[in-house]
Amino acid sequence: MRDRLLLVLLSALILLPALSSPAAAYTYTDKLGRTITIRTPVKRAVLYETYELLPVTGTWDQVAGLSRYAQDNDLLQAINPHRLRAIPDVGSAMDTNAEVLLKLKPDVVLTWTVNPQTVRFLEQKGLPVISVYPESIAELYGVMRMQGTLFGREKQVEAAIAKMEELFSLIRKRVAAVHPSQRKKALYLTGKQTRANGRIGVTNDLFKLMGLENAGKEINERSTEVSLERIISWNPDLIFIWGSARYTAADLKNNPQWRHIRAIRGGAVFKEPKWGTWSPRLAPIALWMASCAYPERFRDLDIDKTIDRFYRDVYGIPYAKVTRIEK
Image 1 (cartoon, helix red, strand yellow):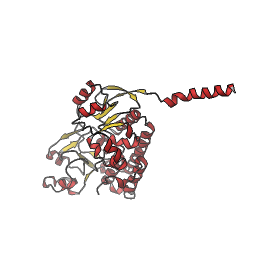
Image 2 (image 1 turned 90 degrees about the vertical axis):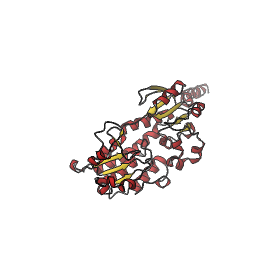
Image 3 (image 1 turned 180 degrees about the horizontal axis):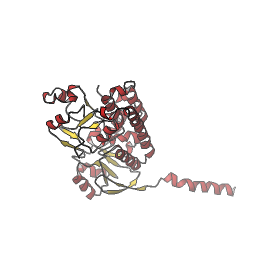
Image 4 (image 1 turned 30 degrees about the vertical axis):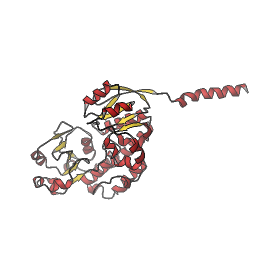
């Protein structure tokens, strides 16, 4: 009897640390070169960026505030609209509502590098702030893993990354046979019709993945304003437009000043859906872009069904519940 009691007590002592789940210190160096140490898992996070990972981690109750853009996000609305409406709007990374943010007393604020002054201000107020700007797919994975660690959801994030890699691998295999001399030149335009992405950033990484030459490769920046004459001299075969841009593919196609560009003459101008590219949704965007660039390589693949399977695997919802890619 006494031996049995000792065995029970010993088992309880062994299990106690696992049940109590003590907080651990996590140290991360952000894109601004700042080293931040945070106790994890966080209980009150504010997300100005990478909020499309929230449905993957499922940590809605650990989020104290969201960017105003998150409130209109099709993915978040499709998955948890009631909880989304209950989370306070804290402005955006460019116009942070500091008053609301300070009242929330978050454990961490996750933003991007657009406003270093605000980051310094919040830091002076005692708030831990992490600024991100992934410039490659590998860096994006690092940011995703950081968020998984913050919330204690590393396994869920790794599962999402694995599904992204499945699509990227599919793309690589499909375009591998494209001869270097047959590779097309692509231009990626952002908020303005003449603001082009350069050779730094996730887009450039995607173009390499898809066997495309980046028309803006001579630009040693993330993006910059260029003249229309320069775009004409590049003469891209394809033009992709950022999903949040306020102009359409038709605006470029119908502009007589653009008529001499090969992409315009061939009707190869495409606007992305308004999906986050710093999220798992980068993978289905890449699949769609690759199919636009080399349709003959994807003719036997049902793109919609493949994207639907990705949504079901990663987010647990059908593709039909979010804003679909325009054809």
